[in-house]
Image 1 (spheres, helix red, strand yellow):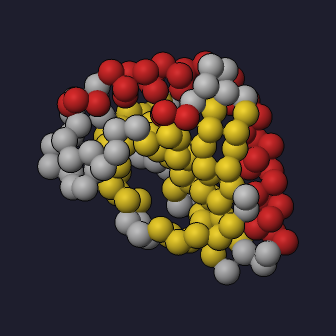
Image 2 (cartoon, rainbow, N blue to C red):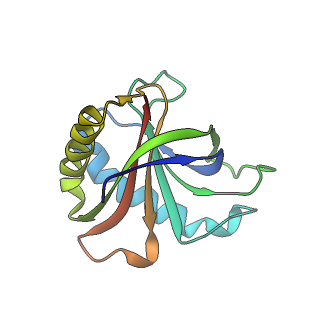
Length: 153
């Protein structure tokens, strides 16, 4: 389902992955998902241990380049070694669900980008794009997630 939603500030703690190709990201993201799952006990103030958030920025700087797999926290007190804390400011997003094989996620993004253009919105390339994954809903070889692409009117 395509929709426009607004979200307040989101505090995240997670693991950063920086790769040079899309194929490399596709290979390595499952490894950081497993690493985050294995280290959940190290992260204080978790909102929901089963809800993982992937974030990236289209127009990234050196500090924002890459892909993070995170969990939301109520507050950031301490950050485990090898992890980062990121505060995503309030933002309006176009949103769509994706259920299927991981490599087809680009099809959902294409559909969402078409919706954005047709609805008179503009994508915000220097804001965080969010991907929310309920880990209890993931099946072997398939993913279930909600994508959020930052937009303005």
